[in-house]
Amino acid sequence: QVQLRESGGGLVQAGGSLRLSCAASGPTFSSYTLGWFRQAPGKEREFVAAIRWGGIYTYYADSVKGRFTISRDNARNTVFLQMSSLKPEDTAAYYCAADYRGSVVRDPGEYDYWGQGTQVTVSS
Image 1: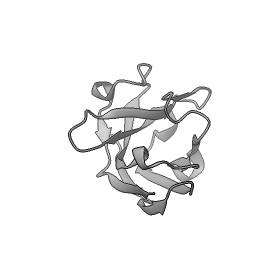
Image 2 (image 1 turned 90 degrees about the vertical axis):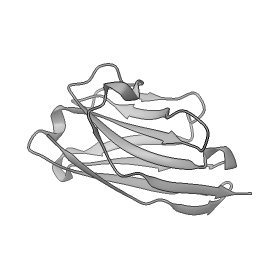
Image 3 (image 1 turned 180 degrees about the vertical axis):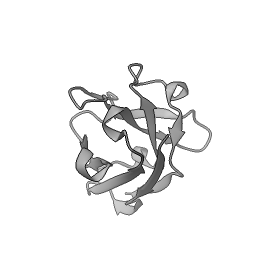
């Protein structure tokens, strides 16, 4: 079992950058697939990015590909989401999630553990 704590959200102007962090507690961090999801008011929770347990594969939504980068530091039990060239449509609450040895990386229903969420607001 893991506990997740997110940080790094805030308000940024369009074209700017922001780095989200998610710190996890637990003895088997490297065995968890980690994902970032976002949810705007009135919309479903949306897949953003994921990194497979073991760190070999990464996955991105088409809307963020080329702008966002997911990475993990297993030594510090932390996963990051580096966001660049931010757009107003990126505005949402962002959530970190973990799934033990997960392989279905884009479905939020597959993840067992979630952080509290952090708000990202992009102004024009």
